[in-house]
Amino acid sequence: MSRRSDQRREAVFTVYQHDLTGRPLHDLFERDAALFTRSLAHATTDHQAEFDELIGKHAKGWSIDRINPLERSIMRVALLEMLHPDVVPADKPIPPEGAISQAVDTAKTFCDADAPKFVNGILNAILEERGLGRS
Image (cartoon, rainbow, N blue to C red; front, side, top):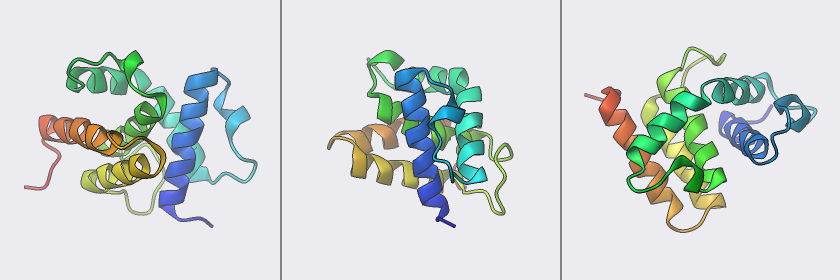
């Protein structure tokens, strides 16, 4: 079984493909995709309107449609785990700071040089707004 971070990355890319193509999620999963990956992707798309509103609110000067689709998908998946940790089956939910860290790492690996700072800034602003950070 793959690590949770790998499964999160798979969910990000499935959400990304869904966003770009409009194809149903079930057509986009790898045949052996883990339950966690599938649940994360489905729940992320179920809450997409909520996440896009939050991202748009904190992306000063950027509409949601102008944000790189992969960066949007990275932030959407992180927001699901930050704001709705009970939605996805997990033995131990990832803390909000961990979700941000993994989102930034994914942006560092797959996006342009400015993306990690952009993703980090938006997700941390939402974390602060919601009072989810460590006290």
